[in-house]
Length: 452
Ligand code: PFF
Ligand code: NA
Image (tube, rainbow, N blue to C red; front, side, top):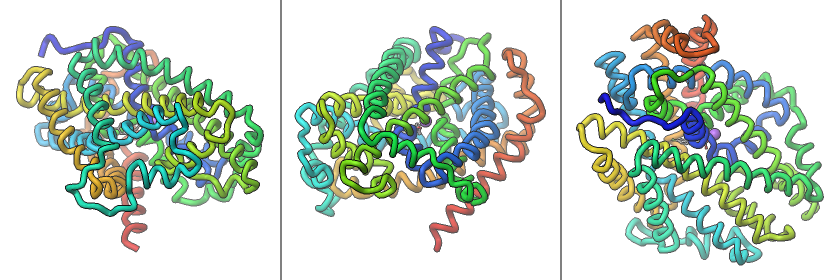
């Protein structure tokens, strides 16, 4: 594999890594999670999770990719033959996500278009579940929803086109365009949001610390969960992306930059979302807490309603959904690259064939969610993937590396040799002890709530 693809520049790698990290998790998951888990007080467990697990794991994944210069499965098999399956497990999780993620990107694309005439009218909830997706109809797996099918195929054409052009000419160029655009567009939205009447009420509600919550174990689980998901850790993504780094690139520094860029964007989104929620609360004469929501509901029901009440509704609606679209697309490209790289190496085929085969398989699977029955299942699949699939992938990964292969010391030397910031014993403690305990505890907590 001597002529392995490489990023053109360090910035190109960083933009791609940040592009993977910044996604729907920042825009609709973080604000609601922080609010429900202590508001301003949440920042303490959150920062703790970032520094003890997020960035240390990112450093580990970057080092693995950089050292072994292979996709996740092959990297693990180079560490120890028996560990290849851990890489495949991660790839499988990413593959499953890549079958439903494009559906949400397709919705965002449609909503950017609908914004131009605020087509959802004055009842966005009914529009989303009724006219647009027709969710009220439990339907069958055979009944196709045309409003989803066509945009979905458009998204796939874009994704496969970017991936097909390769690492430097496809992924890097796409992120060079998407990520700066995303930052600018999002900044415009946030500035508009904080100058709306009621914005300050929203921000007050968001930042008001509830210190009692810090003693609550579930708040810490939420903080770690947010950090893992948000940094795209244990999805095979960061290993794959760092395998395209030139031999002489800094690792630790890049991990810190990725971590802080992602968290800054998260904070920015929290400010924007809560300013807008404050506006809505004041308009409707209720409290902010009554209107807080996250996820699909926030983006496709609450936001359209608020946007309709704002001056220049079409313009801001378009910008908002365009940023969801860009954030989602860059994450989608990164998830798909994991199995494309995995398959390409495993079967020694060309990139083009791997894109057609891997992407094609995911495309076919994604059509399932364009049927009535599939749409109704999307939430459930997402829940299990995030609460069990990823947590397990992270747990397997750290336990295998730190305890079975005992390769932390080895990886540390590798990272230190190319990085400005040197790793100390704290790094090995974070990965060998803190992270496995937290992930194990997280799994048990999730099991407990699901079984009762
Ligand atoms: N890190 C992304 C976010 O915070 O939205 C989400 C994500 C991207 C999750 C890619 C999983 C993934 F494979
Ligand atoms: Na993120």
